[in-house]
Image 1: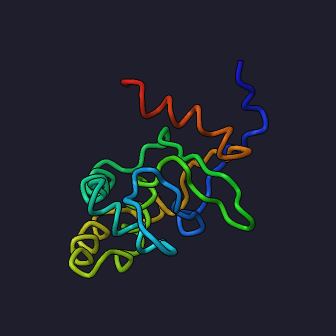
Image 2: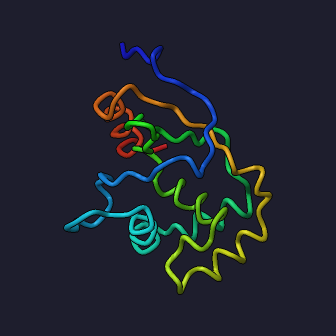
Image 3: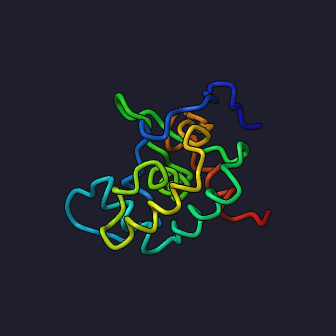
Length: 142
């Protein structure tokens, strides 16, 4: 049986969390990928706009916990990058590529920002420890 007793489960501020530069859903690229690059890629390939719209309409469900790992002084989210991108864009629409900024500004106007400034995050001891849970989330029908 898997032991999760060393995992940390507590809310974290959205703006303090980093998107994962190693996210396998991202297109391969050469060079350093910035957080803004990741946001643009996720908007283009993963329907972040639709998810942001859903959060604006229904709120952020507290059962939707992100999974992160500590990397130096930062927490990188290894599961839930699409959700994190949507939250970041609802808080700061200017993170979007220029053609999408206005769309995220309109969505921001529909959100109670205090309700999404901090969200539930589970911190795994390592990427390796998180991998089986991530695989299970993406290969099991809910």
